[in-house]
Structures are given as structure tokens and as C-alpha cells.
Length: 364
Ligand code: UD1
Image (cartoon, rainbow, N blue to C red; front, side, top):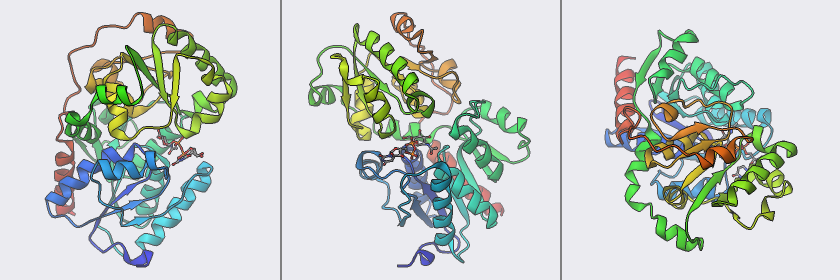
């Protein structure tokens, strides 16, 4: 089948590319399928390792992509451009009803830009989040994607204020909740902390750490400071660190493997990772998604960043922002977990998103 013929006119076309996209897209695709909507899935191939991509398709029952663009890694310009060329070619002369993009990765902004220029309606799932930190590539992706989107589907109320502040108040904004949390709740019975502990030979309390933000792992000096702080934390509680490919070189060079009480492992599949987090005493991370997942799992989360685009995980969750220099102290003084969850993080966001898309397309 040629790329040009994959998409039919009238299709709702979902674009996924990187690990965090998959648990956000799965409930939306399922809810639209249940409503009988004709849809296609394009995987850009931004992530291609088994653990970061294929394993999610199996575990989350995502349909096999109708097309994988296979763009792979590269500089931001190279990767974004390759995704744009691939999506434009895949659309060809067809007239999809809508392109649905997720989160804030390069695949998100690239697809939104192509669709907007072709006059195709764009829906952005997880619109309006802002860290107000333009040194993060994701913040640039978020702002541009929202500007290009017709339907803005938000996970938390403050996202609406952010969109209004950027002049988007007259767009279609719907507070739908968090479809990534739908995925978490749907698989809750499969998360088995005892099983993963036995698989990894863990005994007693442990913490989980994940690090992959460019600001934390790209510079060796910063990586060394972080590794040294983790080393100190590990004197009290052993740390399990599934290592994302991005941080591998610098964190290893910074001496991560030197500490007996830090266990560095390969990235885990979704079920194993969330099981590990569920059984953890606390989590140290710079991931966006993990701030949200720990909030629902009621596991204290220390986010090693100066800001978060997900402040609701602080006000309604288990999250706190920490610096490298106060990490050890904050671990020693973990606050009790609050008994609140963010509004509409209830397992049915996918259905609300599908309903919003169907209603919106019905009016167009
Ligand atoms: C991307 C997203 C980030 C998200 C993260 C989740 C952007 C700008 N960043 O960051 O928001 O939090 O995914 O994982 O879109 N690599 C592999 N195998 C893969 C993919 C990547 O080894 O399957 C390595 C390559 O060396 C690559 C590097 O990781 O150069 C970075 O990959 P990339 O997709 O550019 O960004 P991430 O850091 O993964």
C-alpha cells in the first residue's frame, strides 16, 4: 500500500511518536472506535526501541499503526522536518476530518503544523500546560501546538487560564480530564509490585529514579551533581533507575554505576514500570508523566526541576519540586500524602474526548 492511500477522506487521524503519547492515545482511540468513527493511526517512529514503543502497542491494545514513518532520532530540526515531510506525504490528496495530536513531543508540533497548513482541523489532547520555561523544547512544542489547534482538550482547569493568556480564549476549549490516567486506572489490577520486586531481586524499601531531561542529563557537570546527590540518597534507601537512552552516556560517565545501592536497569515496559513505581517508597524524576502517575498511585514524587507544567500534581497530588542541593534533605522530610486527586482524573477522559471530537466535527 502506498503512503498516499493509507488515509481516507473523512478519517480522524491520530499521530503518536514517543513513549508518553501511547498511554494518552489508547483510551481516545478505543472510545472513538466504540462510537464507530473511522480512524487511522500514524506512528512517526520518533521512538523505536521495543521498550519505548512496540511494548506499549501490545500492552495497551493499541491498534497496529496504519503507517510507521520510521523517522528515528536526530537533531530537533532534522527530526521535526522528517516527521513533517512524512505526514504531508501520508495525507497526500486525502481530506481527513481531523488530526489528533498528544502531549508535547516533536511529533506533536510537527503534525499540528502540517495539518494546519493543509487546512485540516487539529485537536490537541493535553492542551494548555505551561512550565513558562522556554529552555524546554516541550514548552515550545506546547505553545506552538496550541496556537495551531482548533480543539483544545485540557487535563486541568488552569490550562484554560494559560490558553486565555495567549489569546486563545475564543477557541473551543474543553476540560476533559487526563486520558493517560484512564490507561493507568484501566490496568490497575495488572500492576504487581511483588512480582516486579522479585523479578529485579529487590529486598526491602526502595526508591525509583528516572532522568532524561536535556537540562539534567546533557551536560556532564550537571549529571555529576545529580549522581552525587542520588548517591547520598541511596545510603538510606536503595534506588532503582531504569535508564532512558538519552541520559545513558552522561549519567554513566558521571559515575552512576559506582554506587552499590543504585541499581541501573534498562527501560521497563509500561506494566513493569508502573508496578515498580507503585511499590516504591518515593520517586525522584524529571518526567512529566511520572508526576501524574505518582499522584494517582499516592507515591511521594520529588521532581528534579525548577518548574512544572503540571502544578495540579503539587496542589492535588504527591509532587514537589526539588533542587539537586536540597534533594537529600527533602527525602528525609517527606510529607504525608494528601487524600485528593485532580478533578476528572477518573478513568473516563477518553470517552469525554471522543464525545468532544464527535460533537465538534458534527458542527463543522
Ligand atoms: C522525547 C520527548 C520528551 C519526552 C521523552 C519521553 C521531544 C522533544 N522530547 O525525549 O518530551 O519526555 O521523549 O521518553 O520530543 N533514543 C533511543 N531509542 C529510541 C528513541 C531515542 O535510543 O527509541 C535515543 C537516541 O539517542 C536519541 C535520544 O534517545 O537521540 C533522544 O530521543 P528523542 O526522541 O530525540 O528525545 P527524548 O529525549 O526521548
